[in-house]
Amino acid sequence: MNDSPALEATALGKRYGSNWALRDCTLTIPAGSVTALVGPNGAGKTTLLQLAVGLIEPASGAISVLGHDPRAEPLAVLPRVGFVAQDHPLPRRFTIGETLRLGRELNSSWDDAIAERRVDELGLSRRQRVGTLSGGQQAQVALTLALAKRPELLLLDEPVASLDPLARREFLTGVLQAVTETGITVVLSSHIVADLERICDQLIILAKGRTQLVGPIEEILGGHRLLTGPRTDAAAVARVHQVIRESHTERQTTLLVRANGHVYDACWETHEVDLEEIVLAYLGMTSAAARVVAPAAVAR
Amino acid sequence: MIEFHLETRSGVPTYLQLVQQVRQAVRLGILHPGDQLPTVKEVVEQLTINPNTVLRAYRELDLAGLVEGRRGVGTFIASGPPPVPPNDVKTLRSSLQRWIDRARTAGLDDENMSALFANTLRPPTISRVA
Image (cartoon, rainbow over all chains, first blue to last red; front, side, top):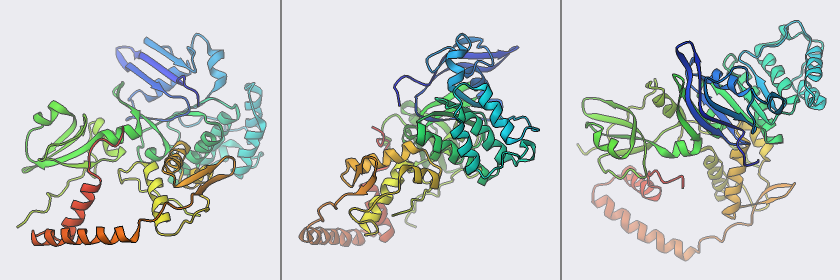
């Protein structure tokens, strides 16, 4: 792992007409990390990834990838970045053998051994046509192409959205194996929050083109708490902590807060919250399983 | 060898779950001094988790003196920590017994006591991340 960040955005923005797809985005992605880029469809995830590989031009601000501006110096960036676009597009009529040859011809840093080993491990034949593969297998072939160029940074746009749970697991295991073996930096966008906690160490929550929360997942988990107590308004708590979500029943108030130090107040019961609940709170939704915590056992 | 498992909705950080499972396995005698822990690669493949998390857990265990990493070989359970002297256990137990009697007189049932004990042992504060 080295110390300079893999990706750095400063007040980055992209506008389509009058609509900001991404606005005022400032963030740092440490080298060697696995970062989840989370948000609903249309939040700006794909825009950020496309800016990272110079496919589109920023309307404002700046982005630096592996220390370089991807549009000003594409040759200093692109050979070192693996990018798997949404739905992992591949030439459907090509055989796997032909697809690998394409990768070899197009990438100067191509490593045949990596590609061959992965295809063998996946149990695929080089004569199979890409169009006849399952969605999971196609995703794995796209990942193989990206990994065989031995990138320092791997960008995955919704890599598992269309995959069944088993294929999703297998794909992510492939990504994490590469992290184990080479220390590659990974950024993956997803609208599925389940499982991210075990896979990623950094989290970026995007909504409506803006970053809502950026940081190490462990700090995020450690810094958020669910408070439950007798019905009250949130003002007193809000003076000390940042209230992300509040909900009330007739007698009870539930607050999800980003805590500023300890929560001492004896009126509140404090609970740890999992990542999915935190993400949903930032996205302004209430989780289907919104935890209605029963009032503490009282003497009757 | 042990096999790790994860509770994804527990709110306990993944690395800490691994640490706790090793501690527990040592405590229960499932792991003995000299036993090898799964390699980082094995854990990554088995659980589909971030290798940095596994490294973090193993580093934590190493710092606590519970395991020792041998470069290029693997991570092994260290020779056990000195057991708590039996006399201390006896004294501690009898003072705990007095506390339990007091608590019961005050109207606490077993569940209340366990909750109070767990809560005092590990207060639900925000200070976990230094």
